[in-house]
Structure formats: C-alpha cells, structure tokens
Image 1 (cartoon, rainbow, N blue to C red):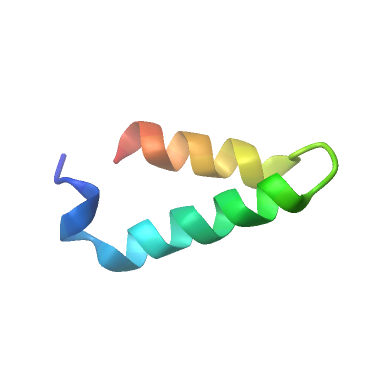
Image 2 (image 1 turned 90 degrees about the vertical axis):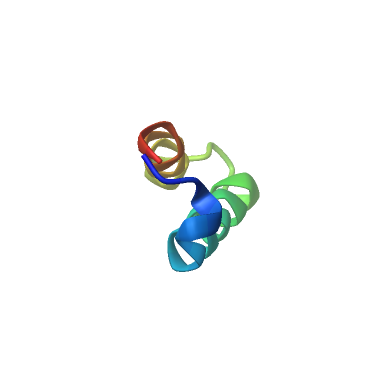
Length: 41
C-alpha cells in the first residue's frame, strides 16, 4: 500500500472523519470508518 502522503485527498478525508469522530459524544461510525481507512492505507 502507498503511504498516506501519496494520497493527500485520502489523508484529508481520514483527518476530517477523525476530527468529526473526536467531537462526537461516543465516536460513532465515523470513528470506525477512520480506523478501518487508516488500517487499510
């Protein structure tokens, strides 16, 4: 897999979702999405 630096749009998406998840009370599906995206990156 290519490093996140090779996919700036994907990196921004992950960071955006992580930010949303962090501000949500229980994390929610956005947190799981960010984790699975990071794991597959």
